[in-house]
Each structure stands twice: as structure tokens, then as C-alpha cells.
Image (tube, rainbow, N blue to C red; front, side, top):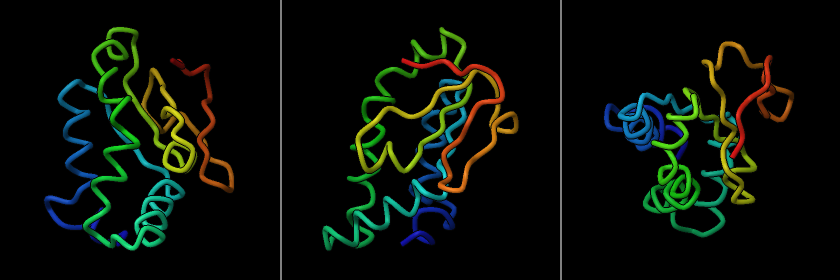
Length: 117
């Protein structure tokens, strides 16, 4: 299922990255987030067809706030496993992901203070 979300030209995650890019915000999902999406689809026995619903549920609130986040200086959104599993908002940063590091669980940590909502 991870392959289906990431590899094809019109892959699900690429579609969401394009939606965020329309507001000049880059979207990144940690490996933990991608695995959490696949695990939920497997647990719900929805397979690849359920992937869109899981991602949509996780990013729906974030997509609603894109314009205001952009106006506050957010340029980068990172979706973690907690975003998928616990319904938390993604992590927001005013600079690209290259300035961030991730711990063993794939949770990003800002090199500088990140914006939060």
C-alpha cells in the first residue's frame, strides 16, 4: 500500500502535496506517518481504497487553515505518525525541512522555533 501512495505519477500523497503547493506550502510525511496510514487501512480491512479516506481525515483540518498559515509565514508542513493516529495537527515550520532533524520514531524537531496553531 505504501507503493500505491507514493510511487505512481498520480499517487495519493503527490496529489495532496500539489494541493498544499497551490498555497505555496510544502507537505512532507514522515516514514512513520506513511506506515501509520498503511497500518490503518490494513486494520480497517479497506486496503488501498481506504487510503484516501484516512489521509483526508488526517489533513482535512490542515487544508482548512492553509491560507491563514501561509499568511503567518508557514512554508512547510510535516505530517507525523501522531497526526495520523491521534488526529493531531501537523507540525508547522517557517522554513524547508532541510533545517529539521528527525528522531528514531520519525518525529521532526525544528532547528529553530516552529510555528504552531
